[in-house]
Image (tube, rainbow, N blue to C red; front, side):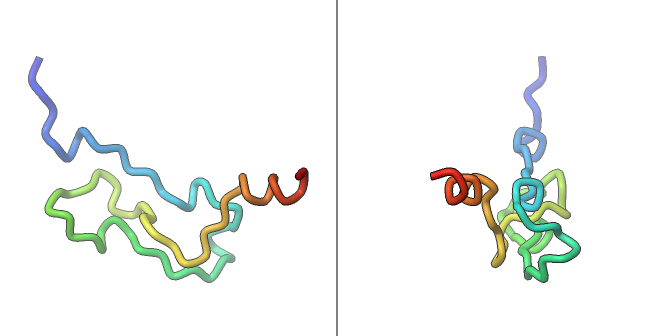
Length: 66
């Protein structure tokens, strides 16, 4: 079996998929995969890699129940 090229080995996770805020309403200034020059094209250029408003749902649950 042929080995996959490097750009197909990586999985791209968008921070927005794991954030407590709604992307349309949060007013964040995200950094997208297309803005990053890492020398390798990422499979999903629209994925958010960094964000100034990210709020983990785990943090919210910890504050409510602990």
